[in-house]
Length: 319
Image (cartoon, rainbow, N blue to C red; front, top):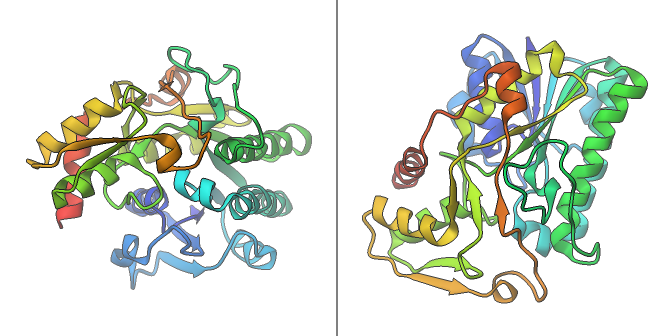
């Protein structure tokens, strides 16, 4: 199989590339390096089965060229991270909406199966226990930039689903919940690598809000395994699947866990949201996935504990 990974030099994209190459596939990695990094894929230099293409998913001619040469598309490219969305909402909207439009148009042109990576941000402020794929979205005002990412990814999902339903294009949607692991940076608001960086430097661990908000974390290795399995499963076509961890932890407890595992002397400081981001910023108090659908169809089951995930990030940053 020859696969195109948009966002291929990114954190998740580079790990997916490793998995595909390990099973004997060829990969084309398309990335504009706005958030992706060449260091993530430098170990692939010189391989005949891995090709890096520098460019944007907004470049329709370039996307046409690379899609015409592959059998499957993993569309991971996106403007990601709360910091980036808040600081550059217009640029983020263009990338996440128009970019996906371009990818879907070319996928349809060449009748290429496409997996679209969406996000748990879709659910917004819905704090239901174990969010399932059919649960309602609860969002704040569209004038708050915080929710623009959720809106954009919802449109991406609609595009993927509608291309399947109306035009017969083979599409699969995955909603990712707080994926963590080596190669991830805290530059765009990713909490675990940010905490680890602060802990290793001995800087204060900065927890936004009061620290009571909870999340579930999943290793990138488990997530890309789920992505691959779903992309190959005929019964997954035209459907959406949650992929994420099951162990819930508050940000305060996460900060303490990182300090302990990093053997750090860092203190923990609490920063109000309007200082960390912008005035009126809204966050989700809880986000826990129900991954029953993916487990029943392809056997998705997280294998790494939170401690193992944190230790892998610590080792990666120390290296």
